[in-house]
Image 1 (cartoon, one colour):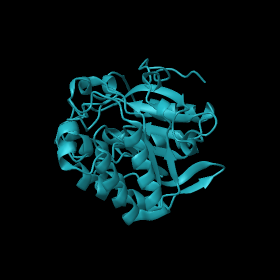
Image 2 (image 1 turned 180 degrees about the vertical axis):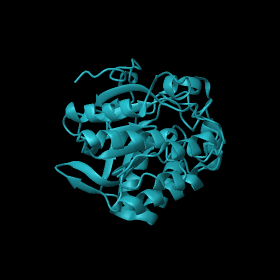
Image 3 (image 1 turned 30 degrees about the vertical axis):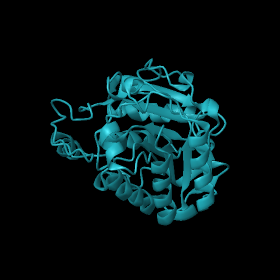
Image 4 (image 1 turned 60 degrees about the vertical axis):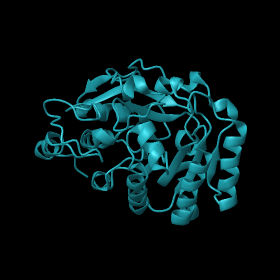
Length: 310
């Protein structure tokens, strides 16, 4: 396994088409639509206990939260880093050290959160980490809005894909995330992820290979949730895992949105879960109503980014 050469990295970042935005930004000198430049920008390195049990284990997932995002979700709970770009730039070598330090902390997995726009840097970071003895399952925790050509670069680098599947409706995707083509793009991306990893495989309760698709139920959109779950079942059956999330909390621009300014009702969430179980999903994670709490949102302190706390 090799990292990327300087020439390969410059070719990808100098005219950036890593994500479906195809913004052609010159990230060697500036930033793209996502806000990402030449160096990876990291907002927080932590052990996160609130991921799904097959990702977090007993000690937590080794999360690395990247700044910037290729979606502009108006309800984003992480808007300080996704839209505000709060974070610290690091070299690829330091990124590799961060990955290895998560292993030393006892993390169950390396959980790369919003990684899409930093794929070249992540590939190099994993290369440097493996030279030190890094061996954790690598989890690619993304919005699902991905180019399959970019995903292909991660073959033999990523073990587990943890994509969102946010919307089936083009109208919702356009209004809430400025991406009306979201579902068509995410369908292709998730098919590619399953093709790359195969059926979900666990060892000692930790996911080693496979795809776990997350969906957060939104207020007033339970029928849209059901439509995308139907697509997942028809396409993949029980070869994938799904996580139906009940943690929607009005924040950011959603606080003033007529449909999004309220929390989810018990009926909305339970009806979606019941529908998934009726379809046949057995590898399905659900959340209790207490999951929708603001204290679960991380504080973007930059901890663990510049110096090791192992």
